[in-house]
Image (cartoon, rainbow over all chains, first blue to last red; front, side, top):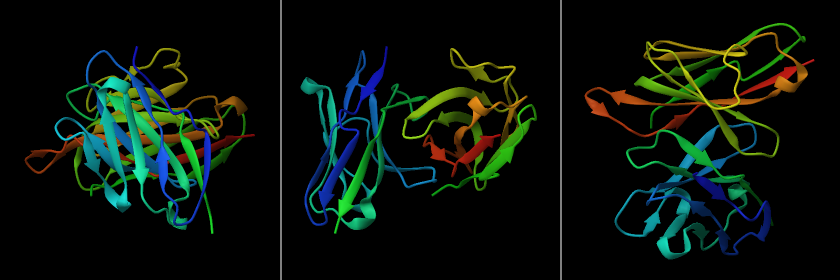
Length: 114
Length: 119
């Protein structure tokens, strides 16, 4: 069965520091991979996605993620975190063919210290 | 980008009453909508998939008689929590995918969520 694991429940970084949020997936084939961000009490906003091609994908707000098939990982990175990046981040996997039915990881809550 | 709007954004009701949550696509035709439930500090759990004009497909463990989903038009899906109890208190989020003009967007757009508190 498809599953997504986000090992870090809560991460705290200082403003300006680099960030890496981990995501591992379990899927029988190469899935579609997504990272979403959720601010408190809000819906989800798509940061970036991987369908195929270049394994390093760029997203909005300065985020990027790298698909590593050998490690079944799709880690999210940002070189310099801003205080406004504090939020909940969800990794998700979808079956090839579209965005449609997504399985979400448990989420990683990011806190940013000034 | 496309906009999906949920209403109400929060609702408090008494135990035993029914509550309806609306999910609207504002600038595209949502052929498929998804309803998720999110418990505090947890991930989103898919409850059901609804396609316009047909019955919703519920995920395993989700009571279809408890959570009534109607997708009567290409811009509106509703989730009705019937005979709500305190354990139904949660954050409910909808998402939608569909077409805009002649293009199949394929992308999934999320509503802002609706927080239900059952007393």
